[in-house]
Length: 289
Image 1 (cartoon, rainbow, N blue to C red):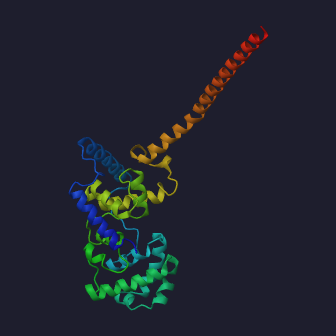
Image 2: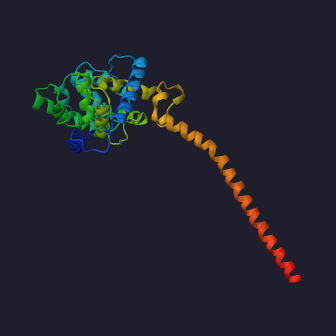
């Protein structure tokens, strides 16, 4: 399950800390805030120039419950594969009630190619039963209600909130986590902490677009494990790229330094050997007197 209750509690604790000014992760200096905001704006402007401002969801759906199920299926699976599966799946199960009453083994076979099909099938059935019992078959809009559903954590909840209810939300998938870190907008590994860093760093009206733009960038240019920096339009504002280039320059200098150090060591040894020879020669002369 993506986004556990423990994650939510941890996020709330971090939220309180930040609101109370009790975290050392925030640069409270005016200079620091100006620098971060200026670079962040440059990143956002470049993304908008490249990708525009159209809102696009990569999972095919016609309504809220279809997107909910598609997003559950997307865990550790490509959106393209999910779209292939849901094309037939949503015809076979045309309503929430159909999924709620589905046979577990049969549903597992229907979604087998998305991976982790045992847990996904179990969560989809339980989730749809929750929708039927708790919410009259409708998908709720609040984060609290969404995360009360089986198989639904913060990531899935934010997908629904952003795409269905148009509530500003940050979805931290593998692309958003990886690229946000490369761009220097977070240092965290935990998705919930990354989400909060981005909520703090990005203007609220750009949260949803950030998800769309970064996912597209991650699929085409800034891939894992090796980004295609030569073609990236964010070169000039990317912390990771700057560090990579700095490392390359350092590596180029190392062989020369090693040679200089080796030469210096050799000269010192030669000089020391010369002094020893001179002393031996002087000793021999003294012995012969």
